[in-house]
Length: 255
Image (cartoon, rainbow, N blue to C red; front, side):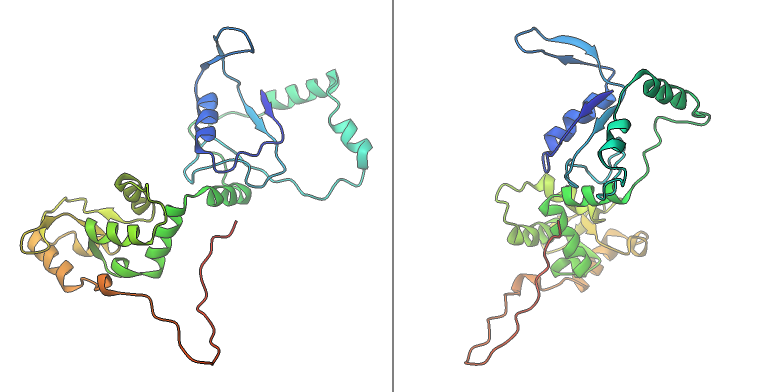
């Protein structure tokens, strides 16, 4: 068992990938200081301890980590209780061993994911990238092209790019965020004539079942009939004059 104490590597996806490999693989290369690399068996388990509620970057679909949050209030027994608790004598080790040996493993499957606790759910939510949060909010609030059931890739990409502060945002990353928010490309891959010279596959934002039986021509007509005029939308100017007004509330990420 590998123990990691005082862990706090929030927002670092590469650290999660390293831990994932350590947990999943049977062996890995390790190197001691000033010693050549050697291949050793990986730990059978990794125990991570932290005072940070968001210590690890965890994707929403993680199947490897089980997260438990212990009460912040200390035990009334004080220091004597904790000294006894952490005393690793032979009796303690023997009790742990026989307790584990007595666990009934009938029906156990290593592919069964751990329980989703409240602590893990909060950690995964904190780990989400800004682009994922933004796209989910656009879908939930039905803004711009997300107000309709159908949209082209250009509809969605331009709308998202205009609102993102990430200048290095790639098309591939946008598509991942769309998929995570439930916006999918037409499973039937119908090529629809969305304008006089352009054919395109459409993205389905909602009501997938309602369009599954349509032909490509019918689907294109449905898209044209409901196309939003989001490209003409501009921010409302602030009111002028000596009077006071209340600015609209802004959504912020809670951490």
